[in-house]
Image 1 (cartoon, rainbow, N blue to C red):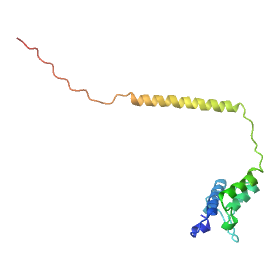
Image 2: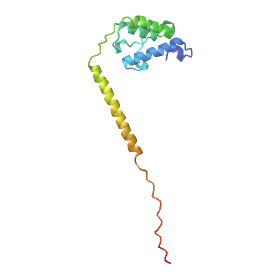
Image 3: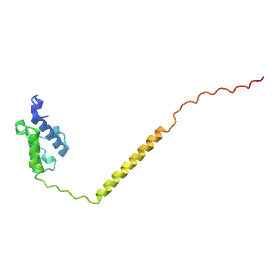
Image 4: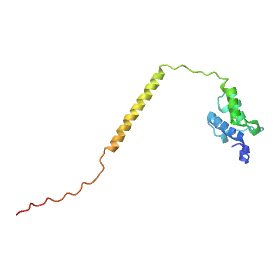
Length: 147
């Protein structure tokens, strides 16, 4: 929780702080209370716990700045910054689909068919068992009438 929210004065950048802390926690594997702070600036120091590029680190540092005036002021501003700073500076390294794609489709198909068959088997096994209903009592045989 950012300092201003803890004191009862949250603003839009408080949410930016929260999202930034979630991202840092995901990158470092450490909860926010275990991340050290710089004694002079009170800024969180986390870059030594994760391998990230300078652009992403700078973006996240601005999201979690101690002073709310130094953060992105709203989600639109943060989105614009990440689009320009981080996303557009990286060229994606995407490999074209190979024959492994066929194996993935085959595995998904077989898994689906197996699930359907197993589901039918369980359904019919549960619905075709006769419940324990007692048979109605039979009347004793009657003696033939003699005339």
